[in-house]
View 1 (cartoon, rainbow, N blue to C red):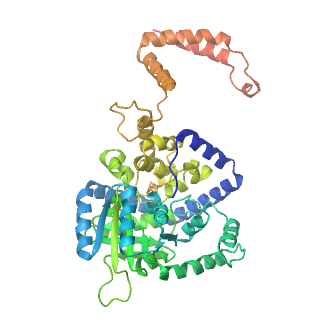
View 2: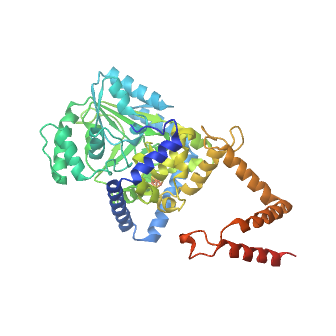
Length: 477
Ligand code: SF4
């Protein structure tokens, strides 16, 4: 599980970012990977008209789902229950883990095999299970690599994107008994598969995430490329699906447009290798499938975003990662520098709700506001607007009307606040503005004509100030 930004969030974030920027090899890895993903996405959306229409549809479906979220969640619960899926509600990460642990203890589970699930990362599922003496093994290849390395994912779709094949070869040779060093990608995948294959049969519980939960039918939709998700959800006798409350949609026909946007934006695939639709546990006469299916619906701060008319758009996210792939900041510092489960632009807007603005506010400032993220977001989340709002919240006076989030005001700085208040006062009173301008213009005599070598090609300050003064004089009535 990735750790949230700690005691001195601004300084810690700065240190991590500085270290990442100075790591030339890692920067090269990320740059190459981001260029590759951008190019694959572009190839999928060659028809701009089709893309625009699909994004409109995706945005409309997500907005509709959120507008009706309480009703849809209730409908999902009753339909899942009728299908034989047991539904659990978790307000916090700790509650979600406690629910999973209760299930594990009841069925006397010792091993859990996991498909890819960012919500399980978010709640620290692996740590919670290991603390209780239960093995939780990642089966997605990228997740398996970072788990083996004792790291957290650096990308929400490609968790081990920061690693080269040489580094993975060394890791496998060091950690997997009998595995010699190789940097051949196919051979590395075969080694990982050999280890994981046996684990599915030994596992008591399979854990998965959910891409979309369909309220009308009680169906859990799950996409993946490796087949490990299907193994997790069918081989062990118990399947636990864990997801955020925002993943619900009303109808099964809402899924295909979102799926198309998701896979094309995420990995540049028209469709993933596997699309799993799970609606019930194994039925009499069926040859496979779990005997029990559980769905844990996790809030963990999402209600805070939901309650705010502007910040609710955060919950439209379908976790495609395209905003990260196109973010100039993410491409340079990578995922680990953020210190949160969700890095990049999506991490900057969602983490304050999950962890509090007091520990995550530097992320909102780690953006050039260039708008690349919102340009590629398949469900049109206005990410720069949300970042500006979070910056204002971070600087708001605690207790004021502007401070409405957990941890608002954490970035407030008395000196800066005094400077900007003075600035605002001067600009709002004409007499004061003229007096200040006059006083400042007196100061130009103190500045050197030439400030240094780098200014030689620029207009020297004194003549520039003189010209400005003449202009102001001419402009006076
Ligand atoms: S914010 Fe948009 S682009 Fe980023 S992960 Fe979510 S859906 Fe994808």
